Length: 130
Figure 1 (tube, helix red, strand yellow):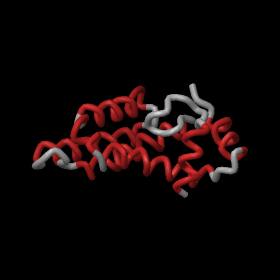
Figure 2 (cartoon, helix red, strand yellow):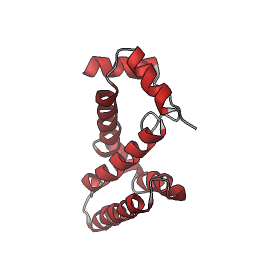
Figure 3 (cartoon, helix red, strand yellow):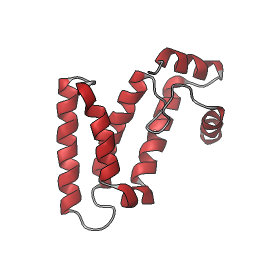
Figure 4 (cartoon, helix red, strand yellow):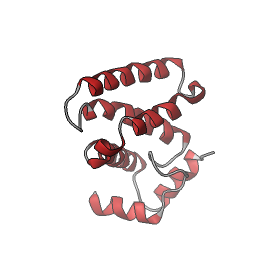
């Protein structure tokens, strides 16, 4: 599906520190979901889609999947008990971080990019911000 070695080699060839890029992109993707109107407009359904993808076939392993279930229960409990359109958005952050990290491990580029090669536009955006 994805090729993490190819992704990392491409980033290195473009003069990008792979780990710094990973952390920057994770923060960017999670912030986009939790610190914008995206949260108010799409949760809890979009978060649950990320969780379902993470849990598919217990890919990350039983212990990590159990932890994801506990994080999800905590988030949904806070969401239901919350007040306002941004209720419990901080509880979604560790869920999305785990989803991002797992997809990255598989070779994907972030939560949204369904391929293993970071495009030039994304790399340029990273270099502008860092």
